[in-house]
Amino acid sequence: MSRGVRMLEVLADAEAPLSIGEIAAALGVHRSIAYRILRTLEEHALVVRDDAGKVLSGPGLAVLARSVARSLQSAALPVLTELSGDLGLTAFIAVWDQVDCVTLVTVEPNTHGATLAQRPGTRQSFAAGAPSIAIQSAISEEQWRTIDPSSPYRPEARLARERGYAVSFDEVIPGVGSVAAPILRPGLTPAAVAVVHLGRRDDTAAIGARLTRAAAHIQRHLT
Image 1 (cartoon, helix red, strand yellow):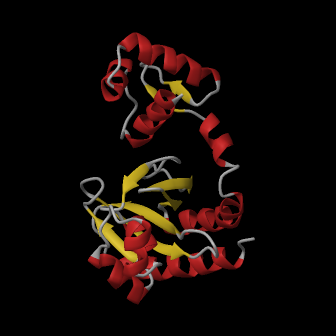
Image 2: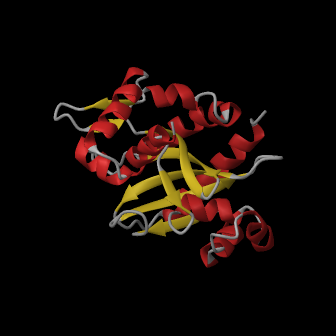
């Protein structure tokens, strides 16, 4: 079971579909073992294979995700849809999961131009990315050291707390930036609403203000 979970994590972290050999190498197991794990996950639609036979996360993960943070997803989905449509950017919700920042739900714009995908289940450390900074900014530095002493409290989080949103560029993927605002959840760890974009932009302040309003709207509708 642990290898199956690890395989899902490897696929979520990958920037492109992986071959069986690449998965086996990442897991440190023989190809035959990786294949058996893959077949089990395929039976539950947790992974699928593309036309070239490479493996990527499957639609079954979305079914599982609907039972996780259901209230947050329900409150966020219409907001993400509006953000994505208006800004022409992929919008998503990130949550704090142990020592990582994890994408919970995402909406891509309905455009013909180049956009960035942000798959649910994608993990990134708290050392990079606007969603991570935004989540950190929602709590004090003293609280952070108590909750997650393994990850440093970033200086950018202090700035994000002052202005209400966080920005990041070139940290997770070269040439890619993100903007995010924290979502406060009473009794739970904070989350973030975010967008990703290609190249540098001169309107991040306007995007940040829009995300701050979106976060406030989501907070009001959490149950």
